[in-house]
Length: 256
Image (cartoon, rainbow, N blue to C red; front, side):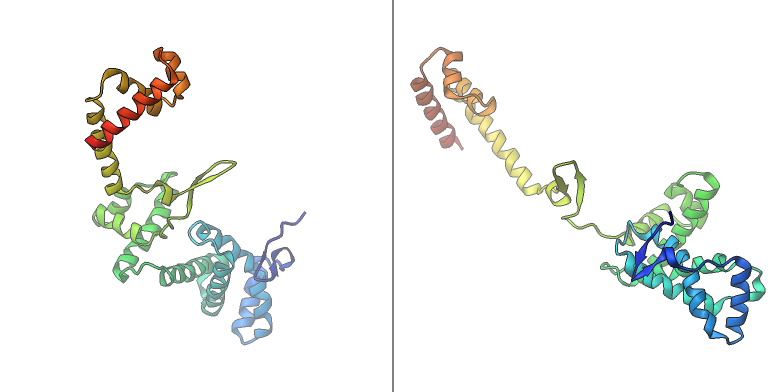
């Protein structure tokens, strides 16, 4: 069964396939002025565009946008391909497609980054890919910086600058039933400080309570027991538990 991907109304399973030799002959005719073959040549290389955009999908999930931009890079590669280079067309076209997509992502990023910072980041990404092939693992930032002969902190800042910002509402964890967003995991320092201060104040206030009242509050509000359960544990009636709990709460409130 032929795999099928439909993007921008194009069914990739129906695209023509040309050998490297056929593509070379078509390019010669196109560059000689025979534009009747250009459309067929473009369609014959759309799978190449599709293979390139996969690496960008985690950062920019709109595949159709990337596909269209990649097609622009493909057309530029056709127009600028040098037949004297003795290269396969795909070898020349892939960097052109990648470059076009990166320019698109750079220019459409909601966070504006200086040109020098962007250039350093893209150099770092290029070096990272090269070192990954040499080392058979992902290189460290120190290794990338050493290869570029720049400070490690500058490489880190540059790579962070071009990273796609995360929405506070993006899910960062999910199970079968529910998802947790980043917003739910962001703490408010002032709120946390307030809760801590209140917790300390309550503990100090509870120290002033008689032993039985303090014991009832602990069982009621920290252990989650009902008044009936407490009455059985302490050996007094539920009415007495209720009265002692009320007295203890009033004392704590006054102390706070």
